[in-house]
Image 1 (cartoon, rainbow, N blue to C red):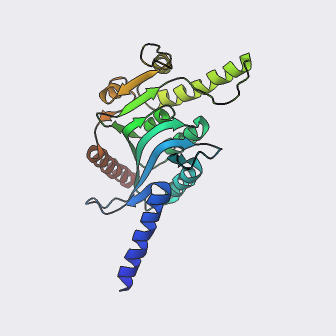
Image 2 (image 1 turned 135 degrees about the horizontal axis):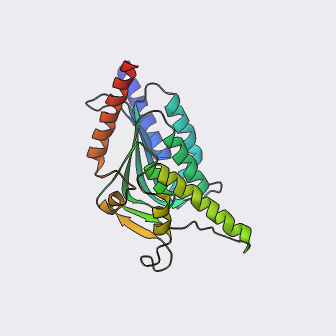
Image 3 (image 1 turned 60 degrees about the vertical axis):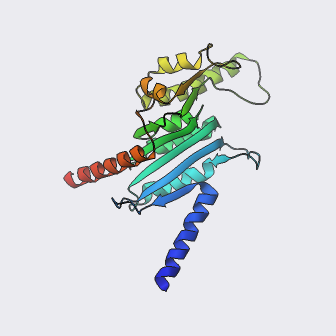
Length: 235
């Protein structure tokens, strides 16, 4: 009876975590590795709250959770599911930096899309996948609202773009020059500059490691966890 109550409480807690933050800890797999599932969906919310009707990923939820994962010895690895239109640059980069600095094995899977600031998020993990129909949009930085038309503003834009392309280039096989060229492409988007990459195109450009789905991504993460544990035994 007591065991059933504990299981019910655990299930309720998991359902609440999925509902509130789109996160879940998996530990029922045959390999018995404890994996934290982090979903980055909709628009990445920054310092201002978006409309209640907008699907968002809130960085104030994700950053503390990543710190908790790093400090939790029971969690073996992290699976990041991405389907985002982009969003706040500072918040997206903050999450990407946290993911890239985790000591535990991490794998990302792009489903649907990983646009704009979603590109650094997709490459911030140790290994990345994209489904065959998944898309990535690489375009210049844009700001909403009042913008002062002064040289300093354009210098700031350039600095922000350099931060993004520099991070992506440091975490994938594409060069910063190659990424900047894709950003400034004028032949693909009718109302904007940029490049759309679909599935295998993201792999051929050196941004994503491999085309695959959840099965391949999970197998890869389990493999990386086993390799990490073996290295720990040798040390």
